[in-house]
Amino acid sequence: MVAMGGGGDEEVEEYLFKVVIIGDSAVGKSNLLSRYARNEFNLHSKATIGVEFQTQSMDIDGKEVKAQIWDTAGQDRFRAVTSAYYRGAFGALVVYDVSRRSTFDSVARWLDELNTHSDTTVAKMLVGNKCDLSSIREVSVEEGTRLAEAEGLFFIETSALDSTNVKTAFEIVIKEIYNNVSRKVLDSHSYKADLSINRVTLSSDETYEKKQATGRFSCCY
Image 1: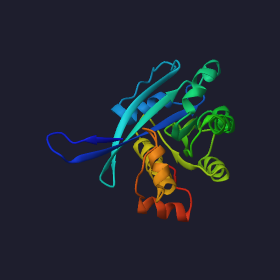
Image 2 (image 1 turned 90 degrees about the vertical axis):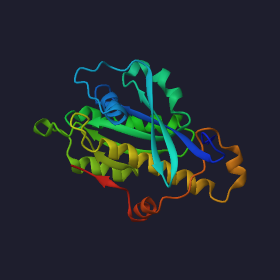
Image 3 (image 1 turned 180 degrees about the vertical axis):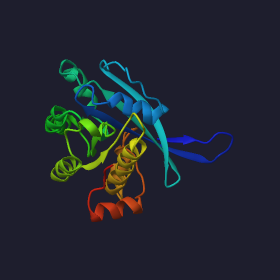
């Protein structure tokens, strides 16, 4: 999407991508989004009903890139409703709670659902949330790393409570989308012409290209 700059003839390019946050109920999806979007944390937040979203912007190579981040309900009874929201997603954060092994065991199911319903190349990040709960940890950093490597995912541990790595997690996914799309549309004018509002043309990011060449980014605390 291209928008005109105000007060002059200069054009300001804006790009919009859809990102979904998935995982079991109560792993902290809503608090990850609220911490990233508004720097807020609610210890007593209620379960998400259906789908909520926030739009955040960041600058990449001098272009304004907007991420429309969807927080999907983790309860099984809402899965049939929220599955439609996978379509058009270019990025996904698959979240588990490091203090509850059952949520880690569910990651494979969430990945299967994502792969079934997504219709684009999706940048995927495995997120071990609540790393501040070290005293009751049930899933080790090493286990998260192994799963991410096996599934070809980025991996990071976060804490929405104290902000650890939250911004980093979202920015890695958004920049990876930037790279994925740029590789697809490079020198492909017919593809560019067919792009919808959330399928856009971006130039490559050298730093992340180098990370792609050396292996998946992993950041664990």
